Length: 133
Image (cartoon, rainbow, N blue to C red; front, side, top):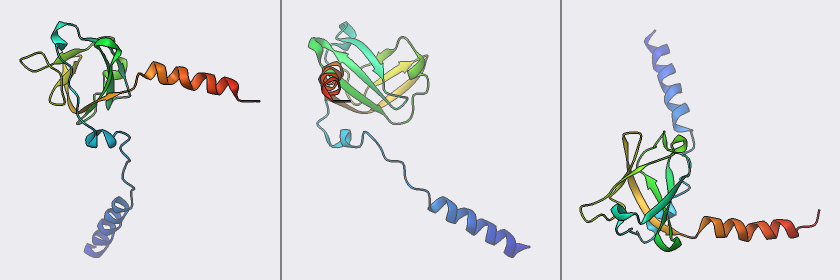
């Protein structure tokens, strides 16, 4: 009986060991220079766009965009219409800040400046229209 239990335990451990690790789509953000958004408490963050439950795009002043990734998931983020920012005492948002979604604090892992997602979509649209069918 003990040998069967040991065999089943070994098989279960072997099955766990063969699972491939999940690739982090935002791994490059950890190596990129970290950004900060000044005066977040005075309206310098204009809007946000969820990127699933593990990242968010923030639109800052002057059309600058930032991507924040989280230490864990932020499960309510894709379904919310408003968020609050947890900034430092000076009102600055950086990688040590967090976003609050429906009362849950989602701590940032990274905060990096990224290109305007609307401009990237507009550049891709004409290229798709020019392709012959």
